[in-house]
Image (cartoon, rainbow, N blue to C red):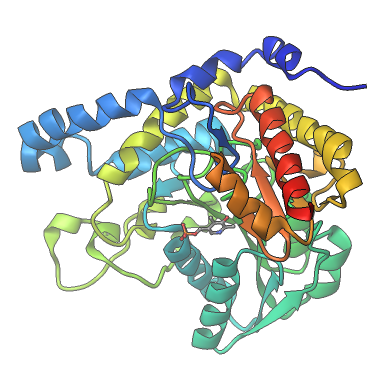
Length: 404
Ligand SMILES: *Cc1c(COP(=O)(O)O)cnc(C)c1O
């Protein structure tokens, strides 16, 4: 039995949102919205008016007229719309990598006497490299968790890795390779029971999978805004820190923007109260413009509805892979059960590197991840079911062409 994608699109309550994105009218198949989301059409107007009015017209007065507050204001919006975080706990700042560094250093400083940072071997490279760097710098060691690369960190694996030596556990909510969706509240509880803090990387969940940081009792979280939050290439990341930790947060890049009174220009550093102390230098205002349009759209659509469509899209991709690709030797490298799967689907075949190159030439744009993995990213508000069908039919055709 095959499902007709036109029927699925007709029954999709969010289908109309697709037209709000630049390029949606073209036949190109975009399977990489989980690496760089498409721009919204309204963002073009926002950028133009920013140059002409806010920047060009207000000039340096802009800092007093909203720019200085923008990191915290967007942080609160993010918290409310997609992170389940009350106000005053999220702020937009540097890149994900830099915020991971700041958050990890902050966390280990808050757990003196403990000697280990726990990370899984399949976590995103930057998370692993920064954890190792922080461990080296602070005289700690990394305890690595080995995971099944088609899945991720389970409660059992984490329980075996933590103990009274653990300062910090660093995990991703959605695994960048397999899309495995970690059980945040359960894993957070295990870290807490061992007396450790936990830092969640939300890069592949923010804007696609509902997050409930306050309810899940998360200590720290970091995520980027250019994937499912469509902030554009290099748009700044966000950091969340739970209110009860704020007084003890001592991050390592003590810049003037995280100072209690930046314009006092005083002789020594005194951290700002609250989440603002996670800032370091001048906020990247231009980089925060596009993100605001996507947040408005997500609020309009509702994150639960976005997740429902995301599950529909990934379920459909799994179904078509079963229908067209499995008999050609392709295997599913993501959880089959949607409750354990984020917003993308990984498919493996020995020829996937060559298939990916051939797809890009035909305007079908997925991602390739070693070893042999085709990553089908399905951005819920800009992807249609017909697009999924068309893209995976092209994967089949490319496989057939390459295997002759
Ligand atoms: C995309 C991604 C990053 C990116 O870090 P940058 O500093 O923005 O390059 C980090 N962690 C994870 C899990 C990611 O998916």
